[in-house]
Structure formats: structure tokens, C-alpha cells
Image (cartoon, rainbow, N blue to C red; front, side, top):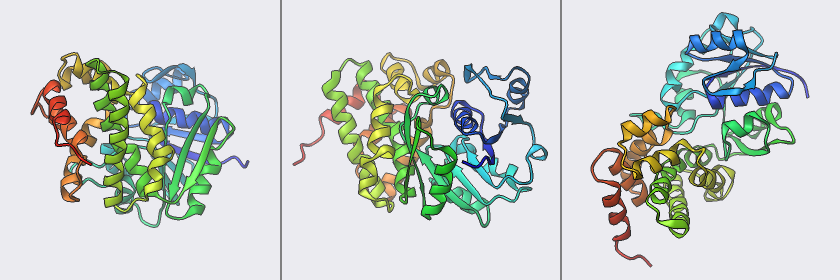
Length: 328
């Protein structure tokens, strides 16, 4: 494998974990974040104390404070900033000659409901776009535990190009052309994780959790098909795989939010206790708009949004779901 310089935007837990994968593949990784205080600390102590405090940052990862520190030969970007910050983060790239971006955030842009590829198309000219998603907790990726993800792009050679950067025996990459379905699966599963967290927190048991995951997958698929995705995508890593992981493991911040809501905490109290980005909060709002726009029935997502917006209690939301008219 030929070593390449790569810029990673976003030094949260996921961006840092992806930087570590690239570094283990012997690439020169430049890691930028809007939090300059954190970047300066990473330069000094070689740890990301805020997000991955146990993992030493290798010598071939270079935390940077500004675009002037980016080598001119960098042509590939990995974007791991939250979806709500993606558009503004692209301003950082304007002085650079970027050929391709692989976006690794999961969600929709607030207010516009745009998927990430559309945001990049709006802001960066003549740039190839890929998306990275799949069942992958940052903490496990960071320590090198086995993981399999999907990279998708309209042009297969772009997906393959980014796959070549990342792929190892322990970080396996599968390429796909359904970049819309891969993004929708990665986004909407966070809403379902909130629902399963609520269910488990209320003690409804394994049967209810399995039902929520299964019916949640049906909702994700319906929305995806209405937006041009392929049905088979939702049975793969970026669909069912990511959904199972996020709904069943307490490393998921979205699941933990549901558990705390079931305990009686408000969204604000639960978010403060978790202390990191909870993607499902914004995603639930955008999914509600998309479901209405595309005339897609999404009852689980609807009740999660009602809880988030304080339109009903968790008990009332559950009652509305279980009392729905029987379907064939």
C-alpha cells in the first residue's frame, strides 16, 4: 500500500478513531478540529483526553490548527464533523485543491433535510464524494477491534479509492454504489436506538426490543425507497448491521438517551449527562419532515419525536404505538 497524506476533519471520538486506522495503514494523517484548545493539547500530550483518553496518538497523526499547516499535496479529505456543522466546516477547505471527500457523519442537515453528499455538492466544486457508514463504535475501532463498514459512492472507483486507504484485516471495507441508502440507514437507525432505549429502560424485555428493531428497519426501508435508495442496502452493514449495534449496546449515545428518558429525565438533563453529540435528536426532527413530505408512515419515529418535543410522556408514546390499528 502506498502511503498518502490525508486530512481528517473532526477530532471527536469518531474522527480520531478513523485517523488512527489511517495511521496504522502508514498514511500521514492531518487532524483538524474547530476546538483549537483540544488540538493544542493533543499536540502537546499526544492523547485525545476528551474523547479517547486511553489511546496514544501515533507520530504520523499531526493535529493541526489551520489550513496553512495542510500540505499542498493533500487531495483526499475524511469529514467526521457532525452533520449540523458539515456545511460550515467546508469553508476550511476553500484554499485547498481537493479532489475527493469521504463523509463519515450520520444524519441530515438541520432545516434543509439534505443528506451529506448534497451539502458537499453545494459547497465544493469538482469534487468526488463517498460516504462511510456501518456498525462501528469509535472506542472499538480506536483500539483495533475487528470492524466491518461500507463505503459507497456514485462512481465505484471513488469508493474503491477510499477503501484502499482504510482497509485492513481488522477494519474491513465493503464498497457499494447506493450512497443514498447507506446514508439513510446510518442516520435513521439513531432514532430507532432512542426508541429501543426507552423500551428497555421501561423493562419491556427482549421481545419488545426485537419487535422495535424489526419494525424500525421497515420504517427505515420505506423512507429510503421513497428517496431513491435500494432495498437490499438496508439488509447490509449500513442498514441492519448498524441498526442492531446501535439498538442493543450501551456504547450507543442514542440508546443511552432512551434509557435516561425512561428513567424520567428530560431531554436536556439526559443530554447533559451523556455529554457528547446525540445525533438522533436532530435526526428525529428531520425524519418527521421527510416522512410527511414523502407520505411515508413511520410510527416509531413519530412517537420518538413526540417525546423529544415534550408532546407526550414516554408512557403515552408507548401506549400510542401499542394501540395502533392492527395491520395485515
